[in-house]
Length: 441
Image 1 (cartoon, rainbow, N blue to C red):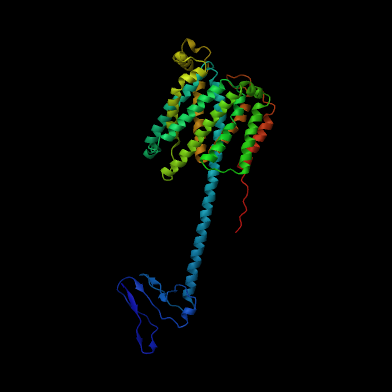
Image 2 (tube, one colour):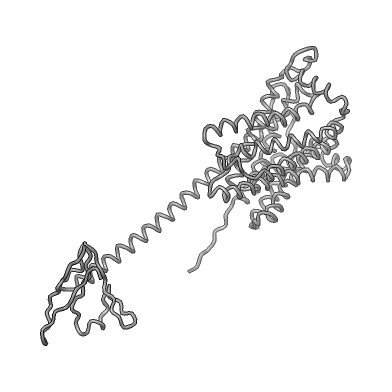
């Protein structure tokens, strides 16, 4: 042993003193114990397998002897302080968790509100952008698709040099991004095909199947489980939108006249879009694991997803142009005329008033809507982002009743608009309501 103590005894007389022989800064100290010591409950002494284990102390010194149970008082004080410190630490942990939960709730609420506003602006600006490009809607769709690739990668380049986007983010597997682009291209292709036959009033009704697909795919691929109030809330939201849009219009008759095939094709298009959203949520979850708790930047997903979508759209151009009634052989001339109208130059600029401002505003707002929707998906879930997007539908219906520039006098509100809006709000509140859980010890 580096340091030790020996007890010096002389006959029957036992000294109360302790002799210390120091060989280093450490000291081990053994005190004389009374005969009935083992019958007392003394802190710091442990009897194990017949061996008496005595506390060893360092250079700071050993126990100090004191009368009146000084050691017990100090030990109790130490244990009381330790217990109070532990309790305080637990309280601080609970408070930190509650504060984090409140901050996350506030962040989701703000992101959802921004998504709703951008969703309304997206619908309104699309209608305004078609005022100068009323004869070139297919050009507007391709302008948005291929324009996003340039804009997103430009932003990604700037964020990479600013240190926001890392090499680890860029080295992520590109297979999921390829699947995102394919799903978005298929959703656009099937949606365009069905939208060319269905009326404008029937499409928002069928779009409510998007929420159903979101829930089913989240349960299957993400293992999510929804409470009864959440499922009821989703049902009420969809019902409210259907009542808001369908009342006072011929949407129901249009659904019958279009035929079952085109209705099913539009529903399938929303299946592709829902699968795309759930896949993006999977990418976020996988990135949190692969990046060791980090999170992938939004523009990494937007850039690569848009690039692969543009690639598949390019492959589908012969099919898509035929859907819009444009022979593929005439597609170059159509795109050239659409570009002239967009730039508002040349002899084809007649009737293109408002270009290029209105189309560019639509592209900017649509991009902002996509970014806000993806951010909301990142911090919440696919279903929450879908509810925020859905909530923008009745608000957009109301905005179209106002006198907007280039659109003239607005249309009248549907007869059941108020009833549908009330049901929709009740659905959102029902979904957000968290039932209290009684805990028992």
